[in-house]
Length: 406
Image 1 (cartoon, one colour):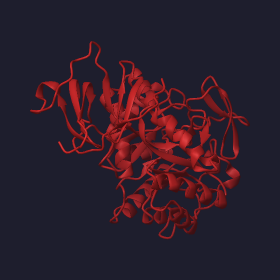
Image 2 (tube, helix red, strand yellow):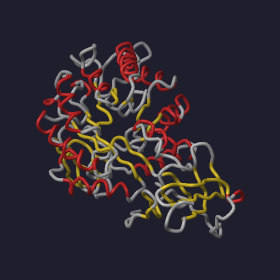
Image 3 (cartoon, helix red, strand yellow):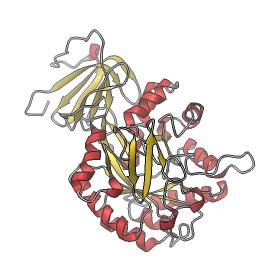
Image 4 (cartoon, one colour):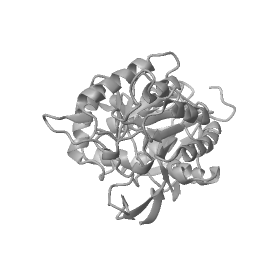
C-alpha cells in the first residue's frame, strides 16, 4: 500500500468487466484501486469489513460519452463554467464519474465559443471531453437539431473546433451523405487527424455509403495518436432511416461493424428512445464490448417536468419525456446513466453486460485505460448502489463526493 491515508476497503456484490463477485472486496489506496476480488481471497494485511445483512452492489464509476446537460443546466447554452458545472454535478451525484459534454448544431461562432468554454472544464479535469453533434448532418434526419444551422462538411471548421477544444475533442457526429464529409480532404478525415473520433449519426445514408464512411474512419484512425481504433455511432436507430429488408440503411451497416469489432454503437436505453426488444437484440448481436450506453441527457435530467431549451430550440418535458415544443420530436433524454443501467437490467440484459456498456466500453472510446472498471491500478471511481441499483455513495479518484441524489 502506498497512500498516506489508511486504505479504504469496501465489501459487497462487486461487478467487474468479467465477473460478479457476490461477496467481493474493493481496496482503494489514495486515488487508485489496489485490489479487487472475492472476500475469501483477501490479501494478507487487508482488514475485511463485516458483511452487511443486505450487501450493497459496488459498480465502477460510469462513463457517459454523450450528454447535453442536467440539473437544469445545458452545455450548449452555458455562458460560463459555473453553469456547465451544474450539469456535471448532477450526473456525478448519480454515479457518472466521467462525463463528455455534448453540443448541438449551431453556427460557427456559437460552436467555437461553447467549445472553448467546455475546454476550460476539461482542462480542470471536470469533464472527460467534448462531443460535437453536428453541424454536418442530414436535414432529413435532423431530429431535435436545428436544420437551419446544418452545413456541408468543412475540414477547416473541424480544425478550428479541434484547436478550440485544446485536445479535448472526443468525437463529432457526421452524416456520410452530407457534401464535404467523405474524401481525402473531407471533414471525416480531418476529424480523425485532429485526434477525435468520427461518429455516424443523424443520417439518411444507405448501408453501402455508411460502410464506406466506417472504413474511411477506421483507416484514418489507424494513425498513431488516435484515442481509439473504432469510430462510434451516435444513438443507433435514433436519427436514422428505419431498417427495411431491401433498404437496410445505416442501422444495419453500423450493427454489422460493431458486431465485427469495428465500431462502437451508442444506445439510449431509457425506456423512451428504444423498445426493450431492440435493446436486447443489440446486446445479443453486438455484445457489451461494442455498446456504449449513453443518456443524450438535456437540462431536464434530474428536474421536474416543464419548459427547457436545447441550444436554439424550445423543449417541453411531460411525464419525464423531452419533446420539441414545435413538432413534438424527442429532444434528448432526461435520465442519468445509472438509470439506463437499471432499465437495461429490468428488461433482461445481464447486470455485468449493462455495467460494462456504461463504463468499460465508453472508457475505451475515450482512450482511457485508467478508468471504467473495478481493476487494480485504475483510478478509484466507483458507485455504491442498493439492490434496486439506486445510488448510495459515489467515489471519484479515491474521495467520496458530498452529494448523492436518489
